[in-house]
Amino acid sequence: MKLDLSEIAHSIGMHYTYEVDEDDSELESSGISLQEHVRGSLEFSNTGQLLLARGWLRATVRLECVRCLTSFPSLQEFAVEEQFALHPERMAGGAHENEEDLFLPDDMEGPECLYQEGILDLTELIRQNLLVNIPFAPLCSEDCAGLCPRCGKNRNEGPCGCPEEDPGQRLSPLGELLSLLKDEDTDGRG
Image (tube, rainbow, N blue to C red; front, side, top):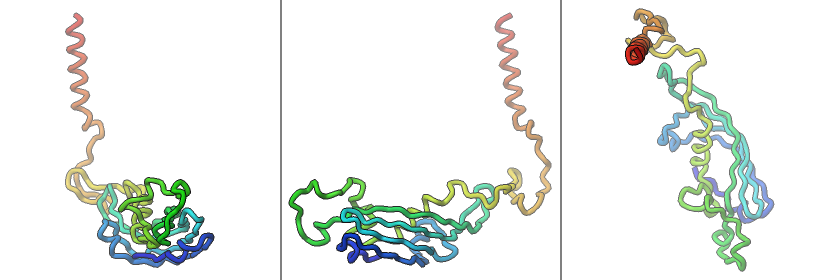
């Protein structure tokens, strides 16, 4: 969704509040599965050189547990604090006498910019902020038992019937290797 902020971009000191209620299919194409609309409130302010965006958003997304691979809903609530350079020469069509008066950091220009010529790409703003807040390794619950390494059954649904593995059994080959190395070390000294 594109949000037209050209009026606030032309009015220094102006504030505008936008109530967000978006169910954007464009987020689906970037791998984010929404369970319900993204809701919240964003306030935009014109400082003269910057357009500030501040507010809170919340969304329930479907994530996949890294232990048991089941899909589960996860409520994500996060603050949004962004700033976008205003380009008065593009907005009003005029030129500035002194180019040093413009505040245009290098990282605020280019095709990746969310805000250009009074139009804010709200979908991309939501997508970027949401991706930063989604856990790197999501878990359906802290005590998720995961999948059985032998048969692949979800252990959260009950026991699978596979024999319990002795934790020391997995490390026994390393113990054998260690004892061989010790034997060689002792044989070499004697």
